Amino acid sequence: MSHRTIAPMALSLLLAACATVSPVVEAPTDPTAPAAAAAPQTGMVSTADLRASEAGMAILEQGGSATDAAIAVMLALTVVEPQSSGIGGGGFFVHGTLTGEVTTLDGRETAPAGAGPDWFLDGNGEPIGFMDAVMSGLSVGVPGNLALAWQAHERYGKLEWAALFAPAIALARDGFVVSERFGDYLERAKNRAARTPAGQALFYNAAGEPLPVGTLVKNPELADTLERLAAEGPDWLYQGPAGAELAEHVAADTPREGAMVAGDLREYEAKWRNPVCGQYRVYRICGMGPPSSGATTVFAILKQLEQFDLAALGAESPTAWHLFAESQRLAYADREVYLGDSDFVDVPVAGLVNSSYLTERGRLISPDATIAEPQAGTPPGADLALADGPEWPESGTSHFAVVDDEGDAVSWTSTVEGPFGSGLVFGGFYLNNELTDFTMVPEVDGVPVANRVEGSKRPRSSMSPTLVYGPEGNLRIAIGAAGGATIPVQTAKALIGVLDWGLTAQEAIALPGLFSPGNTIVLEPDSSLLAMQDDLEALGHTVIVRGMPFKANAVEFVDGRWLGAADPRSEGAALGN
Ligand code: GLU
View 1 (tube, protein in one colour):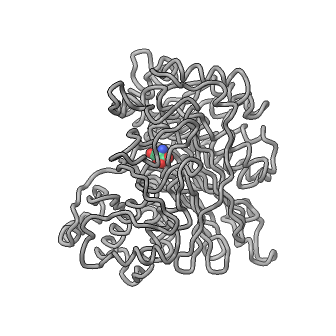
View 2 (cartoon, helix red, strand yellow):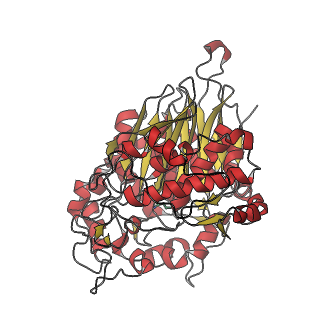
View 3 (tube, protein in one colour):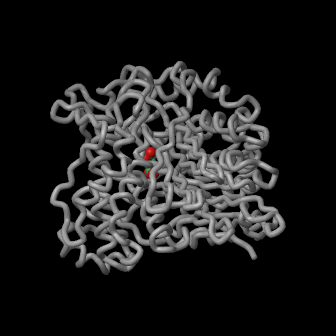
């Protein structure tokens, strides 16, 4: 019996690329089962693009670890999904062993050392336009994914560093087919993707039209870049002349003092951080702490709901979705106030995931009414001298989950922030616009904002690479999502689907989306939730219907088998054998 999960949108891509599809092979069996009962297994890879999943599987088949395979995926996505992630951006890496040893590595981009709280302010002290900031060197942070990959490989790699680059180099050198989704991004985000001649030359014809879906695109400059990185390691970018060139390229597009310099790249390092873990019912949930708001927000949404019997209510119950919305509102109120880069601001992480605090906060949620105006709480250890404002989701990012033959898992969310990042291209790849994840206004009512710009600081993220361990202590699921501020909600929703409603990860990811970070609930268009709109409004909610950038990926362990899950809204694909 075989296992491969391919989202419907991926079918046309799959047909276009079917010459390269790996044979459909046996799903892995329980690594904890007696050897005699278990066929040898290689692992499972779920990513946003079949070709990236193939890259990961190829590495696993060579004996690579989950980390090796995940690095190959990150590199392959740089080539085939440049609108979302890559070596020009950053990410967060969560590693877990089969039996629960979890580590997290922060490869978030940093602001140049010369940046300060007025980075996004004009001469009058007013914030400049958001897109003006995005489409300039002001938005580009020092990329972190390569340093992250190197440090993760040092700790968990089995294959040679250079071997991990082979699939991505082949994709860049030999070409890859423009998929429907990528074609759509080329059209919709043309002003970013083609804002420089280098970007235009990559994916647009001489008349400025996007290359049509089905076109084989080659990116020889990126292939060269990847070959250098394979041979010389990330120092080629961070320590050498290439880094100085990158900084100059960004600085040339940065309309103010303090622009990126070579020293910013030389100083960059990915940081091992303490994982943020908590207990939800019988499960241990672990994820990425600051500068990501991911783990604290996912966990708060879940824990505040623990008092309710969600399993009995079920996925068809408007009350269940109302409770989910209320819990989000509370979690996002705390997130807005407390989350930022903990190297710069005091983030009360332990307090935010404190069981008594969240249980108490959950008591604010009623099945019959809405909270009038959710306020941040005061978690143990909190300093309330911070403030922040709301944020709306942007559409970039890719999550991938990998498990290897030893049951080690990687959950890694990688991003260039918005589609094609800042639109600046260097060495054949797009440079991120991650610094617009900072709050532009440095203070509110005289109170400094936790997520304000500071030199060498990392902007707050929503990315939520997550691992869940079951009651026996064994890995149950590795999951995460793309989609800006909706990421913790997508992750929490899928976990409720799996852990409370007994769905597979695939079914849980496919559940309709409801996003409620403030005083308005956003429902996913054309979804079954629209039938609940009247019920939700009767409870006091303001409800709007609007498309949101959902895209989640997971691997899970069910009945002795690793299964993959990829969002049906995407071209995601899970491969395993
Ligand atoms: N830059 C965002 C973050 O770190 C993710 C962007 C997206 O997923 O669209 O939270």
